[in-house]
Image 1: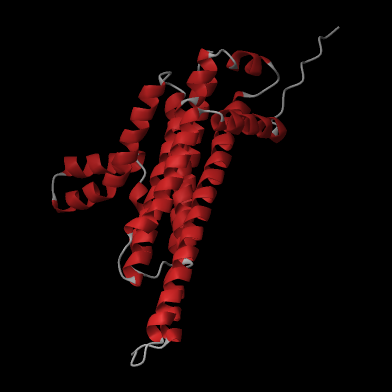
Image 2: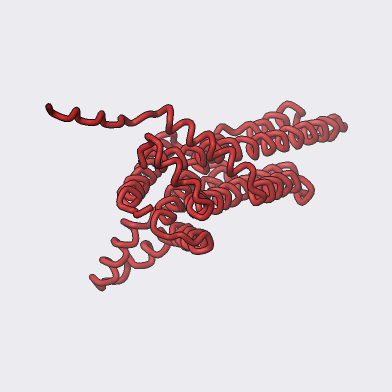
Length: 296
């Protein structure tokens, strides 16, 4: 009598969601998360007190300062939080009972990424709300001051014109585009850090490696431009290799364009987001291959 073939375990998004939700809860309980989040919120809120300039300069300063803070602290949470996921699971030996259950390794790894993605979404949304509140508060103050100044006899600009200029700067749709790409960049950093953690067990090594790649990603575009005038085929080949493996993270920075009031085409935003999602997917695919072969 033939022995029945064991039923193959199918991929379950329910198990992936459970792992992701638990991952988000675990990271939120870490002290570093509260330290970085609170510090980021304080930095964004404090930008108002350093902007004692004209109305236009004040709004520009708040935009530039706040977008930079969201970018930096979002990336730090992505790097530090993701770098601890697998090493802590191995050190605490909590990974063994999980994988001993009917759980795919792909579900486990993608669940970890999904948990960090949800946490990053929450973090960036919270910092963005503080940023929006700060802009609204500044807008109210500037409108009140402009109305008082324009009511003075002999004023050259009407209150309506001043109010229109202030509202145009504070209620800029390009801010949403910039924050959206900040979130995509944080996901890329998260995917890279998760990839590194599949073959490196040291949290410090994971964080340092992620920081190096993060810095190289911002310098990659400048280095590629600098090499265009060099006729050496070796240099060109080297830059192509670097450009292939290291993402151009500088492409996700729209802060300068937003501050200067430049038009940001929606197609550019979507193309950049697609590039980021594609790179993160490739990093996750490589991480899955490595994790599948990893001895645990």
